[in-house]
Length: 247
Ligand code: 5RP
Image (cartoon, rainbow, N blue to C red; front, top):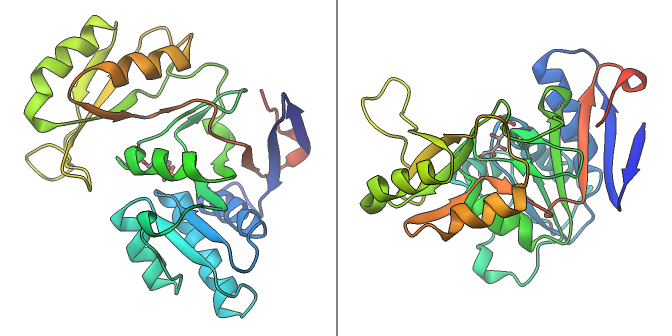
């Protein structure tokens, strides 16, 4: 089933089972059907985007997509591209990205997102903004009526400025927490060498565009995980498309 609201498309994609892997695989397969020979493809980060890289590699290996090049949004994406036989090119060596695939942590009914669960949102925002078409791959658990009620907003911060940035985020009404690495005694460090602060906004985010701008105005902030007005298509994986409720 497809719902069209204000020129944006949110489509349900049926999976074989409701296991997380099956849901991710279903949208990954559907997404790569949109790629045509010769396209430059933005390669997202995270477990769902990783499956899209793998599926893209399968089509290339089968000779169905000639001259396709990928632009990675992280070391993870570039390593997977190499592993699955997708050639990559530097962002600065292309003038255009034809299509980008990526996951998300939350999606609202206007197709605004929270991203950055994988700490890659800064490069993802550059690639997704540059792409003629950005396709977001999620399962229904990530579709929400309002952003920020359950997932915090990830903010990439220059380590040099961590304390003043934390104070400024509190002044914006947020509850910031420095993301720490599992099994390591220290902070997560992004591919760009920065720290990540996860900021809860109790009560949700009423105006994502305004909050996105305000956070990025704080000196020392590199980029935040609110993506507003960037996405054209969201594919929502579901076991039963007919029962899918899209906001
Ligand atoms: C990385 C992201 C990811 O796309 C997001 O965290 C979703 O990941 P997954 O597909 O593993 O649930 O924004 O920065």
